[in-house]
Image 1 (cartoon, rainbow, N blue to C red):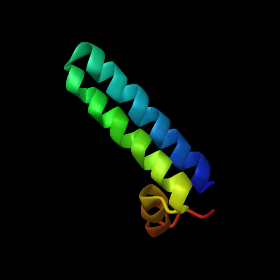
Image 2: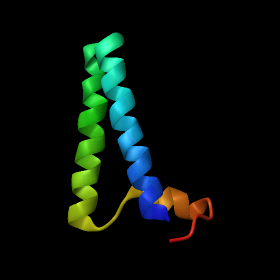
Image 3: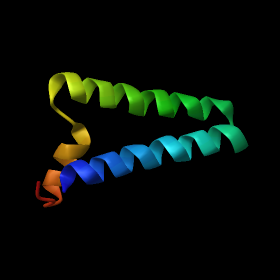
Image 4: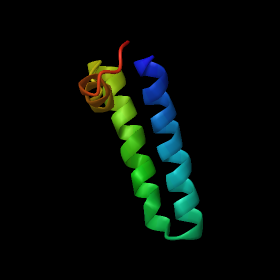
Length: 61
């Protein structure tokens, strides 16, 4: 369950930041880079901050 939520949040962040980059300011692309870097980091270290946050809110695996 947590993995699906993390993927949904990451995908939403990427789409929202791209829409903001198109319609508001190009610098929103940096948020997309930040999300991608965090996804890469979590794949290498097997630790994800969003997973930890969801666990604190009581979301089960």
